[in-house]
Length: 309
View 1 (spheres, rainbow, N blue to C red):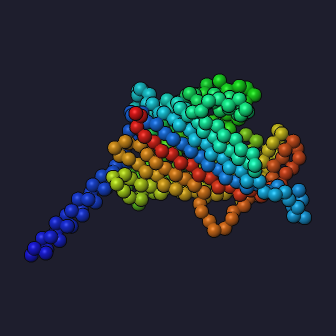
View 2 (cartoon, one colour):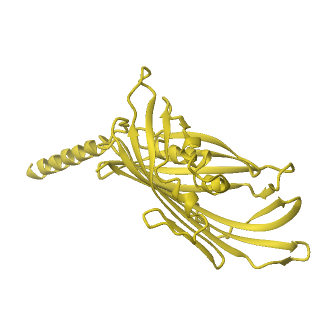
View 3 (cartoon, rainbow, N blue to C red):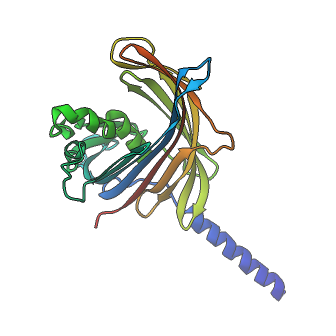
């Protein structure tokens, strides 16, 4: 009898623990400011051919880039449409590290201006910039104010700044910060995106979030993204992408939602690991001269959020 009673108590305790774990509801809170650290990393190796049929090529050049943005999201006052939520987003800090072969460039907004760095002025002008994000019912986002955010960047260096802060990169950031999330374990939700890159082409993403259960009172999600690219092809301009084959890639990662905070507190998405070295053929036109190359690229994006202190 005592043994049965103990077994029943253990069963009830387990059921109670499970109930507490399942209580990690995915309920967003749009009325609380928060900070975010958003980091992207791109590693690539580019091998340029002078004559592909004869297999004559230059040595592959390794390129690495890491960009970290420090942001503060401040809720806007709710309007008549309560299903729309707005945030003012401010860039608090910026770090950039880029390396191509033996050449290396570093920028850190927390350090003093470096007159020897040709990109210092352009990147430093982004710190303090603000833009507005509005979220609809299904988490579709509208980003405005980008032109104002870039207004203090010198005209001759605007292209450099836009490589870090542009419509496409902001759309990716917002989508990763406020994705549509399923509410129960095993459920899935999908989101799609389409982006145009002048002179390069266009790409689409299809991302699936799968509820993977609750850990430490936080909901955990598996994230899988399928990426497809379509080259711009022939046309005007000094630089155009003519071909990228294969033009698909798979990425995977995780995301963690904290019910107490009402937001994602951590996420990561990276190129899917493979034992096989994946290369893509890239053909570009530079001043009407065609360049043929093999490219290997790996990508990673990481986000962490915290309450404003």
